[in-house]
Image (cartoon, rainbow, N blue to C red; front, side, top):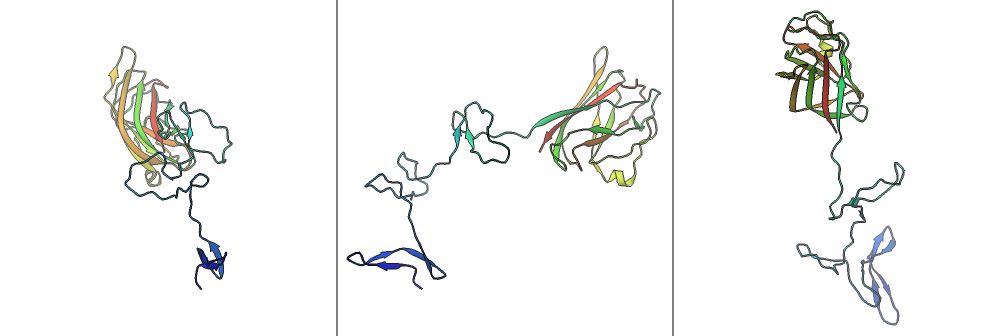
Length: 237
């Protein structure tokens, strides 16, 4: 069937339609002209924009200070731009999560696990099963032992060897390892020392929201029970 329908308002006129299963739907060309004027919505590509160009602008909101939104979660809202018209965007949040393990107070051997209970870096990601990047590791040594070591990281909880025993994990736990970060050298003050490992960019995904870890020494330090503080800087996806 032909798409168009003929009408006769005194003389023959043809209306543009689209025939869909025998039903005619009118074809309409958008026009933004004022009354008694026409301004069709049609602009050639690669032509400089002009004040009278017949285009639809995106419905963004000018919000120079990026104020808080009033709609509830799940409501529709508009994109916002700053005072220069640039669209507001936000980088993924960066968090710092610190843990103080309980250490054995006897001298360690190289290769020993430093603690019996697995380290828990809680809320390492924002949602269950989320992902992120470890960007930096900071180890504060309150006992000024300044011994190099490693932080083994896992996507779910694992079982370390006992503190002051040779580092050993099961095959199942090894499969959960997302990376190993070495630390050392240390930078010493009169009372303590600090090791900083930066620009790591270690990607990880966790089973819930917690990243887990095991500290392994590569020397023979002697610590007090709370002699180390371990901090991770994490860029959350």
